[in-house]
Structures are given as C-alpha cells and as structure tokens.
Length: 236
Image: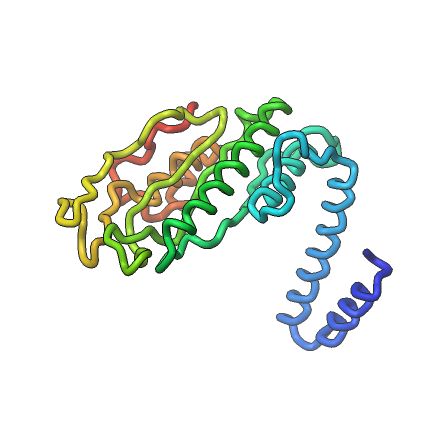
C-alpha cells in the first residue's frame, strides 16, 4: 500500500539512483510506473467477483494466475475506464524440464494444466467471452523421444494446445510424427524434427489477433521462408 513501510523503503531505494544517469532515471521511472499500475490493478480486482465457483485452485500457481487473468478480461469488458481493444497475458507453468522422474512430474503437471484451463474456459464462457479470447501454449524447446534414465533431454519439435471459441478445435493440425527411434523425422540424439515452424503457428494466431498482412513481415521476419502461413486452426 502507498503508506506502508515497504513502500517507503522502496521509494528511498529509488531515490538513491535518481538523476545519477539517464539509464538510472528511465529504469527508476519504469519501476515507479509498474508500482502505480500494480496498485490500479489491485483496486480493479478488489471490486470483482472471485470466480471461485468455476473451480480455480488458489493453492496452484497456474490456476491462480489464470483466475487473475480471467478477472482482468472480465473487468475490461465491464468497466468503462478500461475497454482496451486488445490485451495479452502471459502465465507460466514450470517443471517440464524433466531430466528425471518424468512420469511422476507429468502426472502432477497435466492435472494442474487440465484443471486450471477448465476453470479458466468455464469462467470466460459464463461471461460470454469465449469467442473473444484465445489461449495457446508456447515453449523454448521440446523433449527428446528417447529416455535419459527416467526422464528426457532437451529436444526440438513438440506440440502445442490452442483453446477458445474462435478455435477450430477437436483436431490435430500438422502431421502426427512417427515416434520410432529410427523414424524418418528423428534426428541427432533422438530429437524430433519439427513439421511446422513457430512462425507459421504465430502467424495464424496473429491474424486472428488483428495483425494486418502488410505488418506480418515486421512481426515475423522469418515467415517468408515458409510457403504456408496460415495453418487454418482459427476461425475468420
């Protein structure tokens, strides 16, 4: 809160670097802006329903993050002083770098992912926002096909999930790979060669989000290297 001892200490720390140099001033102002924005968000969330009836787990980091995301989306719809034309939210779920104990880790991770997304989608559907929100996964890297002890190593190709009312769901887009260790798409150290590029995946989402074709080379400069730029999983 603005009058708390923590805030006073924070302001004092910011003051130590004030006018020291241009970089410090810009960095300090960015921190101040982040604090003010955080307070504004807290004020907005304070007056919103908790959405507890949809099954969010307050003890689960992913579920809690998606609950706040849903609240912000609902607030943007209901509050006249917001009404942003587009919003982007990032939530994370760590733990997939499974060099060991993969089966046990996946059991917990997938359960959390399933329950968290189910609650999120249910909340959006209840408020009539399903067609306006698309949820998708992204990752730095995939996993190898072969096991390393009781886990896997860093890989290349993988798969992703896309959810929402505007998604042509219930299908697999791309070619399901042959997962044999000597399969045609398996390369060095049992890594799966991707069938679809990240740029193609992103371009399909960007079009739905409203990125004009003229701006696509700016947003995704490597997209020109791929003949198919729309994978077809989003409705127009």
